[in-house]
Length: 427
Image 1: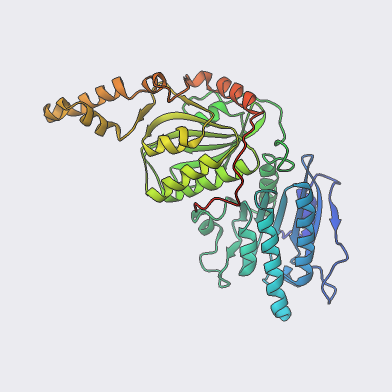
Image 2 (image 1 turned 60 degrees about the vertical axis):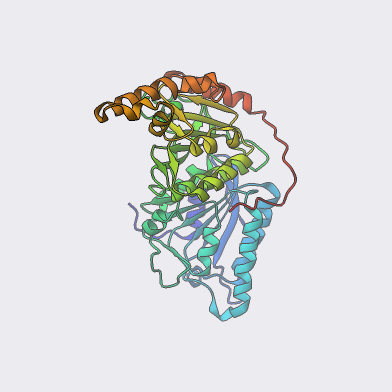
């Protein structure tokens, strides 16, 4: 683990491909001749990107009018091309002597960042302290990568600002051991993003999938392609990026039981990002209920609005609202597959058994469980759902990757027209 502090030029040269970094606004500085941030563009694994790095060697990287102008000019260039923007944050705060002009500078950056949202992928990499209003700017990005020794909080005291605090609160997406690891994580993340919001994400060389059907995402994804987002926040749900036959996809995994409020928010954020940049969304459905009605309603809205290719796989139990939100017609899934042992039910399976077979309740208590399970296996199977038209196909794990590759190939030309509106009202 490296303990040496990197300069802003070190950071940007390490981030961009060798020899590709081109600095912008190199002569734009504050009145005292300091340049509190370095901005520029280049390529990351051959894909164009913009980036800025706060310069801790100049007034501690403090925000200023000059720094804000450089960052906004970088945002404007990114907006013209759609290329991702990565910000590397480490500063002592803002140049307080600029007073209200400093507040205006913060506001200008936040407004511009908001305009870029959904048009340009944005990543914040917090290498050191990022407190106060600067934290608002960093947190406006799509994904946040934090050095484990860094702090991120709108509270300038730094309370509850550690990387682990932000990860458990769902603010940070990744926590890395040091600055170099943070830079490498940012480069890896950009590998799943398109060059702009009108082009597909770059394809990679196809590599075999893992041969372990007990680990389903790994079983259909290219080997070593999975990048899990958000750590343990929102468990037992998981969100990730991956590749299938070389092409980037977003993956949502529910792991049984209840989808918590945190889990629902985690899924919503991931789906909205993938949809904004036309990344196919593969959802593994195994959940019996939502923690709250509000979460269910919002998640239904997010899936229904998404026009990117959507594939749902019922890997376990899909009950009522969870089926509707993640795999049913309300989700707008293009294809719905199920594993042979999957269960699909309008209500909790055991409750359905007792409701539909009145004799179960009259049976001896010792026999009720066995009779309920027998009813479930006979009447709430994936095969029954497929026969009624609610599942497109029953797929063995060994055939799932091939099935998904074919579906993604045909859906690559998917076009959906939507009604004109400013934005959804569901929050």
